[in-house]
Length: 137
Image 1 (cartoon, rainbow, N blue to C red):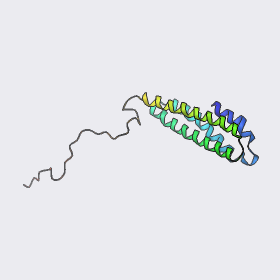
Image 2 (cartoon, one colour):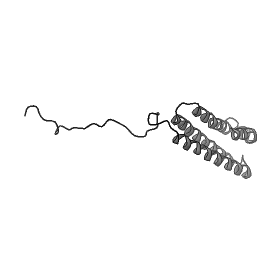
Image 3 (spheres, rainbow, N blue to C red):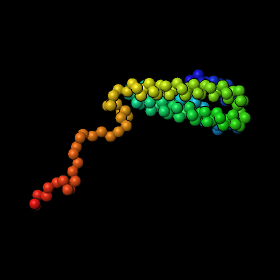
Image 4 (cartoon, one colour):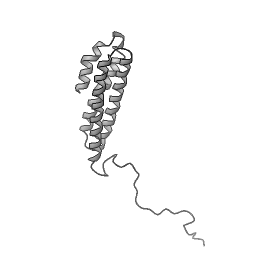
């Protein structure tokens, strides 16, 4: 959340007026989405739901970074500031990926929704028409 506060307080005010309702608003929303999705995932009962919300948070982080990169290319963010932001984004990405790994390792078993990535069924012998005796014979 500190990253979002820093961008909102230090970076967005320096954007030109014409970007107030476009790029700055998109960046503000994607930045707010990162900690909000982590918090929502944390409040869920199943670890796999937490993983799903962390994936959404990670997507929002990458969206934010894309907006920041665009702002840098447009000249709204200096190279020095961009370098500091880049290091911060890499650290958040590393922490978020570590948290996702932790959640995946601590799932509550195969009964947890989303924990199994395969179809399970009872062992059934499948028969074809050739395997079934014709009652007329």
